[in-house]
Length: 84
Image (cartoon, rainbow, N blue to C red):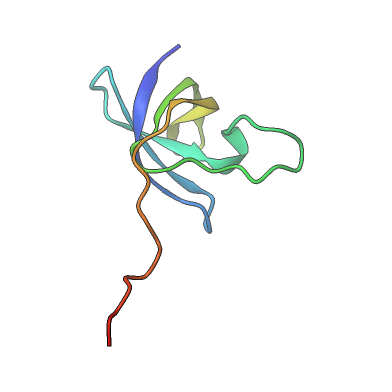
């Protein structure tokens, strides 16, 4: 099963790209291809290491059966504390 690192993923739009470890370029990733439970919110994050299968989509190759095998660093969305 191929592996790669999430280049970017927009959870609001439901898609992004994975940089493939084999050097063959970036591959499209859609939220519906992320493994998870029924009715569960599915997303991946920049820097996550993933494994996946590849299928031919309408616009070229795309990842299917995406599974996170190592979580990447998470960016903090908390605002900075300000001392007044």
